[in-house]
Amino acid sequence: MNVMKISMAAAAACLLATSAHALKTEDRTLKGNMQVEYTKVPGDVNTVAEMFTKGEVYGRIRSNMFLWDWDNEKLNSTKDHDAWGLGGSLIYKTGFFNGFGATLGFYGTVPLTAENTIGTTNIGKAGKDTYRTAADGSEEAIGVLAEGYLEYKAGKTDLKVGRQIIESTLLASNDTKMVPNTFEAAVVENKDVPDTKLRLGYITQQKLRDHQTFHSILAYQKRVENDDSAGHAGLTPAKIAAAGEDKDPEMIFVTAENKSIKNLKLNADYYNIDGFFSTLVLEANYKIALGSDWSLTPGVRYLRQMDDGAGAIGGAALAGNVTAASAKGYTDPTSVDASMWAARLVLANGPFSLMGGFSKVADDADIIAPWRGFPTGGYTRSMAQYNWMANTKTWMVQAKYDFNKAGLVPGLNVAADYADMNYDDAKMLAGSLKYSDRTIFHVDAIQTFKALPNTEFKLRFATVNADPLLKTPITDTTDYDSYNEYRFEINYMF
Figure 1 (cartoon, rainbow, N blue to C red):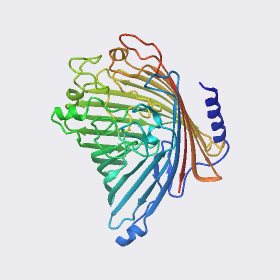
Figure 2: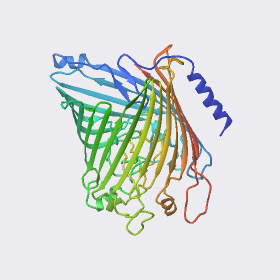
Figure 3: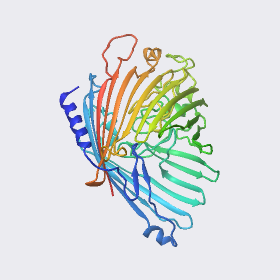
Figure 4: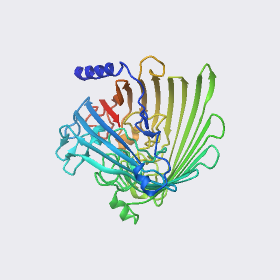
């Protein structure tokens, strides 16, 4: 690891560990995962005119810097690089007249560093979401109306129609860069059942974080359709059309959350894309009081993916190169039937928490989830890692400490995790899996300062130690997947 880069990280960590208080503005809270929680929103008004005159504007300026240091660069594929984006957002929410209101959200980012290109290939990794990549590999600014929806409230029912953020197990804004992942959808939420929240949604399109326009929620095409890193490369527009299906399918989802039993939280999600597949996710977490403010919370998640045609079109692997004629390590190459289970234990006391998690994906098909919600999230997923391919086992240990809550360092909150991911050697050797066994150490430090109100600084560091990717025939045993990654983000809300 470069000594200068270590010094930069250490200096930044020292800077962030001096003094301050937690970031909370008068109308918003910025969560650790960068979700914005609105604590003060416009209320009911008496006229249509007051809907707008009594509306609220929420501003945000953000800077996001990335530094990527590969252990070994690969010719025409990877090289050390950096990225820096400067941008922000303006969100406008109207008041509610007879239950009706609206929200508009404009987001933008401008790349400030030199282009990271090899020919027409942009080699930017995590930092590519600070810009969008043009067809020639160049880096361009993003300016998009990512949110724009009408809303209707009646009692304990809330209906939103239009471009919006959706948060669930598999659907998420994942707004850790500059622009959130959003959806064109109709979503209704109801809380009439005691201790229960129900949602029903209908999604027509998605806009990934580094995209300028909305596109298919499923069809995979670089820079045009859903080219998320977790997308299924075999479900291309051409293959979907050849199978007689629509490249722009709709998704119907249902989520339920219940807390009617003390200390027990139950969640159930169901997602369906007709003609392709459906996914069921069940989860339970139970908090056990241990005394002296200590608690232990065991949790378990089960996911079942059910094929409805996607396997015949794109194959069992996310790599998209598994067909009936070439199994490449998959038992049934034309089915996306899959399952996964994950378990965790969370020990907590005041500002401290310690989590141990494990996940196992069945040796069937890879799990399809290109919507920025992660099947292993909260259990074994570390920053920028994908561990829901068939026959993958992962364990993780994560510790969090809120120095501000403990009264030790005002405004400082630190989280660190260590994960060990074991992928399927047979699939690597067959060329249907592009990930090798690896360990990851990742740490986040979040700091606010009393002298700089409404401002937050976030430093992130990860080091990945990966085995060389197994290939047949073996022509190169160099490890091209190990790296160090540095991120530094500043958020200012007004």
